[in-house]
Image 1 (cartoon, rainbow, N blue to C red):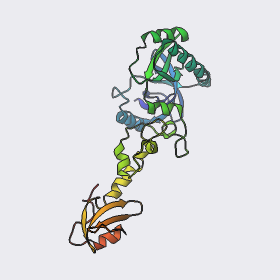
Image 2 (cartoon, one colour; image 1 turned 90 degrees about the vertical axis):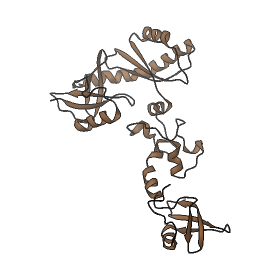
Image 3 (cartoon, one colour; image 1 turned 120 degrees about the vertical axis):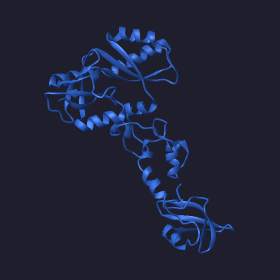
Image 4 (cartoon, one colour; image 1 turned 45 degrees about the vertical axis):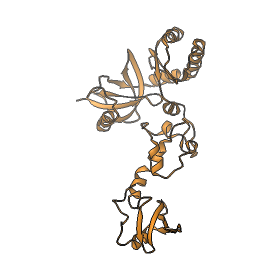
Length: 284
């Protein structure tokens, strides 16, 4: 019976492996099968948790991963990997110089050695399609290894580089956020946030991932309120709902003469009689 393990490598790269004959726990460093060689990574999940993450993230091309965990990494393996990591800044700078020589419109964001030095992954961003066939040959000649150029988006670039968000904390995508999911403008609309891009965009220039964190709470709370534009029959006659304040649980109303007033949601529910009542059916 083989176990199932999720292993993380540099940056946000993760892969899934089978293992047997060894007990693994999250945090263990392991040597795994890689393309034409071996690599070293850190176990982030094992067993059913790893299997479920693999199936839900689409990280498994087959029901059972074809690659295996070979063994627990030794101190020598970890030290060799650390030396390679120290070289990667210089590798990235040299790769950028070669890209500049080719006059290509692409930005090399990060470099990652495979632990056995049989492959070098270069992450890059580009606004348009790039013909880098000759570039790959020159990079392979310069670094004397197999080259993989991997294009990433600006959100992935922010996760690789890290930084500090407008909240004053380190970027979620580079510290703890496991997956970068699509963020739509509707999330900001549902939370009555400013639609000014400068106010709701992160360091990457895309909508902030944290717009998702409280969205469900806002949507569920919104169901308790009447819809904007709805006409209600209250203690003062017919009034139209102008706006709602979910956090303060207040509703602003306007009557036929244009006079406005703001009432607490519970008070409004007590006033409404004979007309539409705010409730679960009054959804945003």
